Length: 194
Image (tube, rainbow, N blue to C red; front, side, top):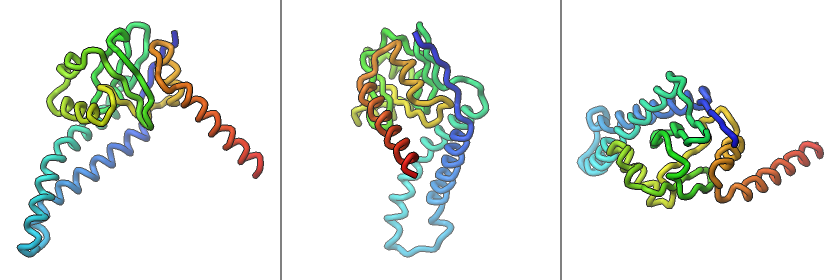
């Protein structure tokens, strides 16, 4: 079987962290905008709605900010694939170690790699309330309990998919490989024509 450990791509994580800082500062600005910028009474309702949205969304941004900062500082792997388990620490919604026998289905859905577990309630019980809410939102969008985007990997997505597939079959991997091969051929043909 194909074992693999994937670490964080520090450059991508730093870009994500800086984006989170920027968005958080923008949200804070919008919360206090009423005191900074003079406005009329007709704008009061719009400002109130914007403030409520920002107050709700700011904790999510701070949670993500702490996650990305921790990711940059620690040397912990994002993904670990071994014979006994799959370890997921790739995003804010990660649930840690997952036994291969606990998985029911894995698929590539657009830019996401998603895993469905057999006992959803047991895995959701591991998560804090904010993480549980966000995972349930993913589930309502048709994704599994575990959603991974390979954007922060220091390895190629196909390397990850092949290693995972050697332990648990991924639905849609064959189609993805064919699509990537066709894109690579088209790219090579363009380079030859130039």
